[in-house]
Image (cartoon, rainbow, N blue to C red):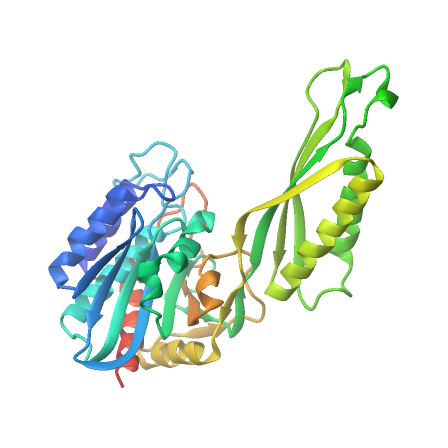
Length: 375
């Protein structure tokens, strides 16, 4: 095992940073990869960074991506490199993903591309969906226009070192819907003099749950989860005049997510109008479904088999979301899983720690994909 890369991974783990605040993390990566003589180092925004290795001949541009950010979760492990930043930890394994990409930089520096370009992207803010969108909108990134993009994510509950693939949708699209209903407060003894959102909320919940159970409208899996409701204030003398609801919408296919969104908006607007309430709807944390390109999936599968890795094809997409979906909307790409063990703590758990022994597996597979692009 590459002890230099493992040491880096543990340093990254010890000093995690939240989305869009990955300044120290980004500098660590830049200082580490400088040694491997990338032809260009391009900063994207405050913390994002690209490393470009140019071939001598013209050819395809292939890009590999990792994430920089950690989570607002207090770590509950006993490892000696445990997070020193209070209530922040790499509980999703992005430290391991960064280590894999730096390991790829090591290998490419000794076997530089003969044609085209190889780009290593370290992206901020994956956990809040903003990172990939910001990268896509960055003028420096727009000049690159990669032909193919690849990324991986460690996946607990799957055999260690196994590769998890799926053509088409690999991970769900999702979005957070915020609904604000405004009526009129009144004395609790005279609620008829006000306009309370209480009945509207009850009706909305009932209608949304009926929509969720309707299997005839959608082509595949959809889900809506009511996650938060705030109605009025804690004042027993006041009938409420304002309420907020927050709902997570989720679907395997982007078309179903759009349809689900439209149906929810229609229900909410019709009910709020019938109850004489004004209604405002907004969205946060919007993740398109991550939809793999068949050709790119084939490249990953062939590369995995060439180095002796087992491949498992998913029957259904994962229910979680990934902002890599922003790239797959535009570019030919493949996002795949790297099994991190059947007994590995789940992602976003406080006792999660990325297993060092799968770093080399990830490096080897990325490198084999890179070699395939040179043929």
